Amino acid sequence: GIKNRSAAAIQISAEQILREAADRQEAHVPEPVLKIHDAEEYQSHLRDRRKRFEDNIRYRREHIGNWVKYARFEEENKEYERARSVMERSLEVEHRSSELWLRYAEFEMRNEFINHARNVFDRAVQILPRVDFLW
Image (cartoon, rainbow, N blue to C red; front, side, top):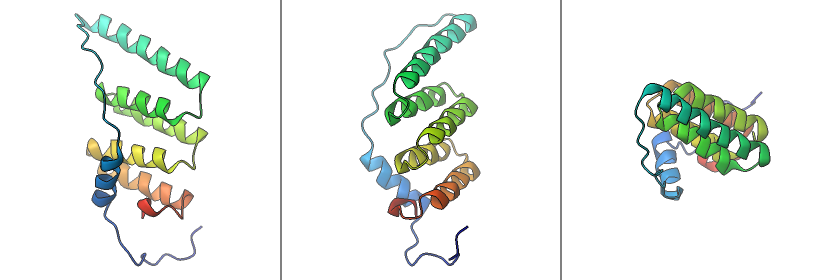
């Protein structure tokens, strides 16, 4: 475990961390608008898109962008548990990626799952003790 439990000399708020991360984020390019006529068609669309994301991941598991885009897709469809599951899977592949941890925490914050976000930060700090922007 961590020996030194005392507060760091410099305390940075999660809000500050997220604001800095947002500044570094690339522009989000929206998908072309798709006309979907009923629930069945919608579910079919989601299945097709998921299959494409899963194929991309099988092809390049270590490519962080594939995971982030997949999670973002689930988030945009209000499939928060699925988005969380994608992020957890990404961390099984690249648990030392500070970017993945940050994107995960940002997702939780954006959707106001504050306790989840705090939990993600806590886990990240245990695994990445020297990464400045997580402190």
